[in-house]
Every structure is written in structure tokens, then in C-alpha cells.
Length: 150
Ligand SMILES: [Zn+2]
Image 1 (cartoon, helix red, strand yellow):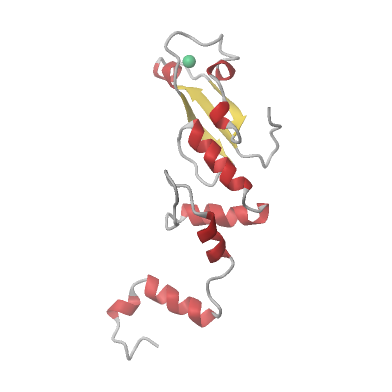
Image 2: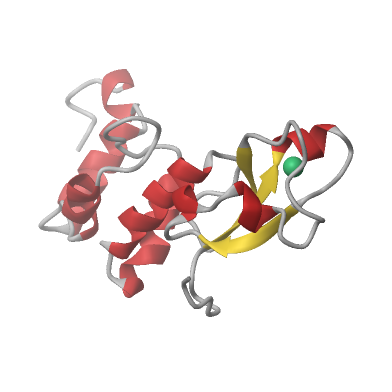
């Protein structure tokens, strides 16, 4: 069992069958290892697992780069990804993901860390280079006659 601190990403894992029955059964768990959380653990304070309880679902997150519902397996993947990022870079990673304009890899929408690091380290040598790329990204380059662009 992991110790939960203020900075430990955590997830609220609930039971879907109970939820559909109108019973909010679940607990906060560390996101790390979320995929291994069992039905018994989720129902520990709810009188135990009932007939029909089967699927667990992350209904809330705290400290992950994304906040939406997901499977416990995906939460575990986000946690593992985060563990590979230096703590001081995590806000930047979250901002990159939140922008919606990030590069994903593998299944789902986990961000590609090599691409993140490449961008975060600074893709541009000078401010002019940065401005030029931003200019192009915003689509101005295509609309403007070439002799006016500079
Ligand atoms: Zn249940």
C-alpha cells in the first residue's frame, strides 16, 4: 500500500454496478498501482462486494495531468508516466496536455515524453525563431504575401 501525501497523484475508484444502483461506493487510492485495486478494497467500507459488482471505474482524479473519468488501468499508466517526469516539470507537462495540442503515444491519450522533453527544453534557439514558428502555427504565414511576412 502506498502512502498518500499531498503531492501523490490519487484517484477515486468506484464500483460501477453500485453506482448504477444509486450507491456511491468507492475510495481514494494512490494513482500508482490503481490497476491492482480490487473489488474488496473498494467495498471495504461499504459492507462488502455485492452480487453484480464487477467493474471498477475512476470517477475523480487529483494530481494527474488530466481530470476526467477513466479506467483504473489508464490511471496507473498516467501515474507511471508522471513518475518519469521530474517534479518541477510536471506543471509544464500538465499544461501541455491541457492545451489539447500535445503528441500522444501508445494507446489512449498518454503524452509522449520524448516529445515533451524536446519541446520543454526549448525547441527554439532564439526568440525570433520562436516568433516565426508561432506565426506559422497561427496560420498567418499562409495568408500573408511572402514579401510582407518579415
Ligand atoms: Zn459494488
